[in-house]
Image 1 (cartoon, one colour):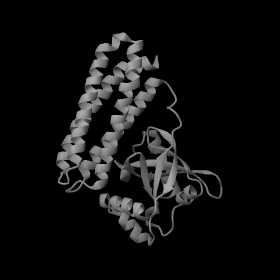
Image 2: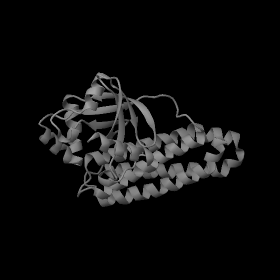
Image 3: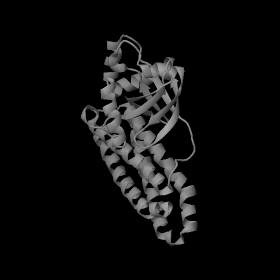
Image 4: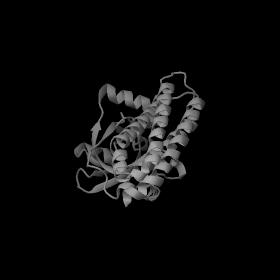
Length: 273
């Protein structure tokens, strides 16, 4: 993409917490900042990505151009990169996939979006696939209530993306869409596990009057976990239809968003105070 066009996308992405309109409306985008291989200058590029468990995958398509994009050369020279996902900014290690793993991930991407295959055909080169492995820089900084709201906003954004992807899917549920859903299930379960193990006990110790609200939040965690298990069971069904998946995702989304709203109502003011 031309530099000026890139900057428009970057500005809109940052202004709207990861969401952009136009031709990229509803698309999965991140901002990748690399260090120039020759200049040492920082360069930021908007890129489509694919969830893959704890890592994200990006493809060096350059829109089907015959040469690898500059950002790819940069991360080969310096694999430490910065990623913005619309809610959080974090450091990551870029790993260029090779051999069977690269081919398998690229095939999964093409199944989900044949445009990747057309890019490779037009480019006349094998498109590199890169995994971004997040580093751990410690907990996010800022007031604890605001951090909790950020985490919740990340789940809201992901649920919205998955709803859009399911609604736009073809006559069957492709492998990448299953991975997207399973990654979200895992992350939401881990978040609730941390809340149950650390945040909730700490809040109850400081604010005994929260007992009724905490009891409701724990019960809602159990309800959400049941829905997550049901969704994962559905995803294991090779005959799963997009309409069935969409209904289940909608049910989960309504439950999760109501839970997040209620949790923020009670906990955010106290955590910030």
